[in-house]
Length: 333
Image (cartoon, rainbow, N blue to C red; front, side, top):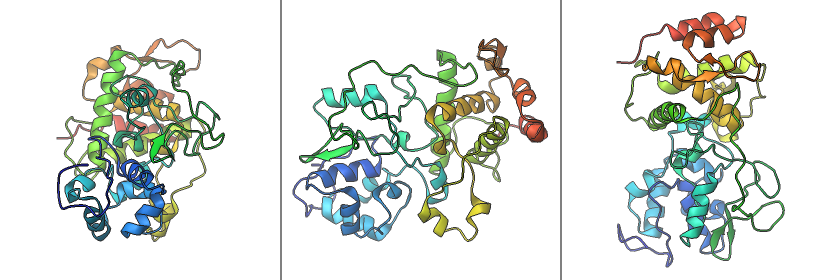
């Protein structure tokens, strides 16, 4: 147990990992007592909305109750959140993971735990292993069933929620499949990492580290990427039916006017393609334009340099003027 804060009222407390998201730690804590994270959250005084919803909601009274229960500091509990409530649409509703990271957890004798960066649509690649994050259970081939992070005998285990047995993570991971002929090379991953880091900082209200096209005091980086996401979805004729979280809808007087498409709502491969395009188009580093290639025409050969101009020409005519306005916007100060 962590030696911080006040003595705890619970006898067994798993220490949160430095990069762990709140709901993951809460699930590991609940597992020690053969409980679900949702049940422990209600016991601590959080509203009955699901433990994963708490990854972007700060509830001071319930947080203080959890401080008393665990002995952790209020700061430790607060920093495990991955976004502010107004950025809820950027938080994924199902788990994603890096297979190699989970393998390393198991090899250390640890249990699987979810990183903060995995919870938001800002992250599509593992920055340590440079692989596309996975979302499909290797055992049942399903998404959004809660597989891989399940309680069994006091610890979280890599179990399939559908089949009920263990998931093997030792086989070969699926090849990274990106749209539009994009290839995850070193240059692209550097560019994506810079955007992902600043998107993550924007989600929690921190200062950006780089300059990005169109960002200002009135228009934050997440807003720009939301607009770019909508342009792309219109262009490829793929507009999923809006299914925002119920708790978010209840807090919006007119939720349809507030709804925005974000990469968190899309399959990881498509979200990755959008983040790649955004990282190049919005970047101030123009030298990238001659080093990243794509296949906007669908000829299966990525032979065209990815530039703001080629992006605009690829867009559907209905949004081309919008796209041109975006690429002509000044960089943030």
